[in-house]
Length: 282
Ligand code: C2E
Ligand code: MG
Ligand code: MG
Ligand code: MG
Image 1 (spheres, protein in one colour):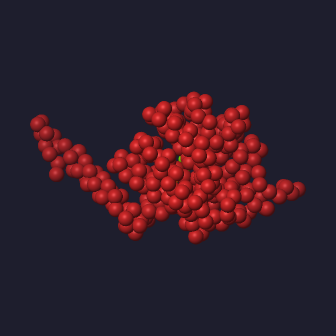
Image 2 (cartoon, rainbow, N blue to C red; image 1 turned 45 degrees about the vertical axis):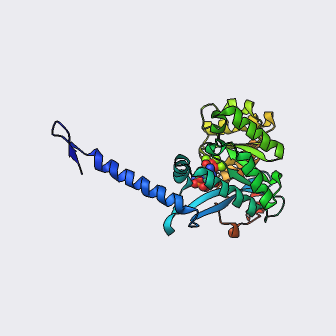
Image 3 (cartoon, rainbow, N blue to C red; image 1 turned 180 degrees about the vertical axis):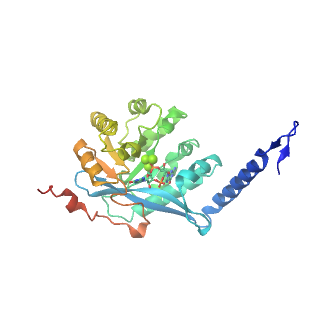
């Protein structure tokens, strides 16, 4: 209910804030129950070799079917899960599921798992990864971990040590959403990533002829100098693909190839591979 302040004006903030607080409480309660209720699903989106269009692996992407309604986007609930201290539990489930699924795929395919910077705070992330690998029997060489630069920003020495241990185990580390952070370049000299994922905002603007192509070219060249592979995320058109092939990008990912799907619906070859690789006619 609106309250009148000292000067007789009506303050409209209180009920609005109350409603928002209530909504947050409900969201928190539902999110805490999501795993036990079986509402969490891991979907998988393919990453393809940019030149051959062979599928190289899949990225695991979390989906929440809240109370049987439509899916809630991870962009919405992951930050919230981080806030309420639920991401460790969720992240552990994701690791276990992803490794287990990948262990049933053909051996040449890898699985990429997104890790929240919060998962590095407890200091046991290496152990969790090791556990997921051991329990599933998946070779570490078939696991790729995607982190954002914030992992190197926070508690950097400890996190750097964890990343190095993971690398020594044979797990690959990819730098996600490259180019969107504060000082992406400085992180490349602090840790030897196996892969850079060029953020989709740059791919979206291809090939309009603006600066996006120049930025992508620069990142691919940079990767080449460091011996780091580059993946373009968010590829949606043939035109974007052809430009990325010309620029020498290593891998491509996007709705052009496939959206994220449930494990049972995955295809291990890309149906348009031959068509798109055929030399242009005429
Ligand atoms: P991300 O890791 O950068 O994942 C790529 C996002 O781009 C995914 O969104 C994917 O569905 C979307 N995408 C892929 N291809 C295209 C395309 O061609 N066009 C467009 N417009 N979008 C495309 P999604 O699944 O909604 O995930 C959003 C973010 O949530 C992810 O960004 C990642 O940061 C986070 N996330 C997802 N799953 C997990 C998880 O298991 N753990 C953690 N910590 N974060 C996760
Ligand atoms: Mg990712
Ligand atoms: Mg990304
Ligand atoms: Mg992203």
